[in-house]
Length: 208
Image (cartoon, rainbow, N blue to C red; front, side, top):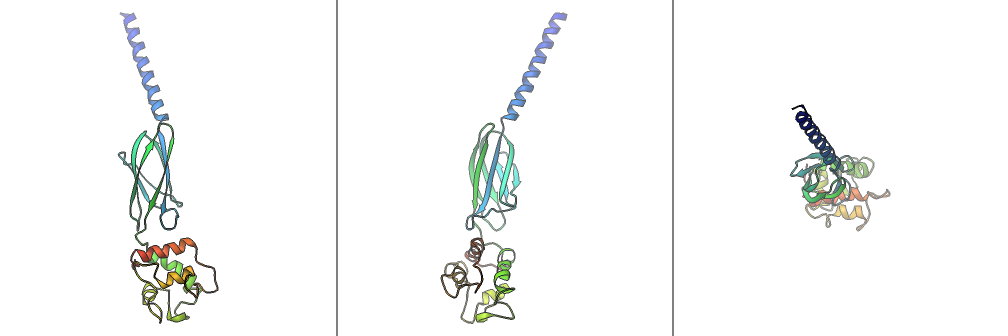
């Protein structure tokens, strides 16, 4: 009887050990999902975007550079979806292999951006506060220190055509395809700032 009990105990301990080893192996072979979320127009990372996986429904947010990491992912095939304010969402299918990192790159198309957050600061810094398009010095009758003034245009007419950045005079002046270039006698706007302005106009030039 004692011998049978010892054999049974040995079997139970062996099964427990195998289970523990198996769990450890499974955990160590989980993968990692890393990636970036970027603006299609500027190529700049989108900070604060929400990234979700399905079917596991894990959710993380991108950092200031638009990067994200989801650790301890069970091997398998996932749909990865990114959402961000003022952007259309986008999804990709990604395969995560055992013990490896899978990399994904999600590109979001802007719905136009925010005038108050994205556009007005650019216009203030480059054209209004230290430039010649404010209430005190409105060159050509153009003031760029508020939404209403911008959409009012200059004494020669509109400088913004909603949904058509390519035809908008302000964009042409900023890009230098029409003279005089803006800002006058100062460095050109960065590519990213030009992209923000074009996105906003193509999105309808909303007062948001």
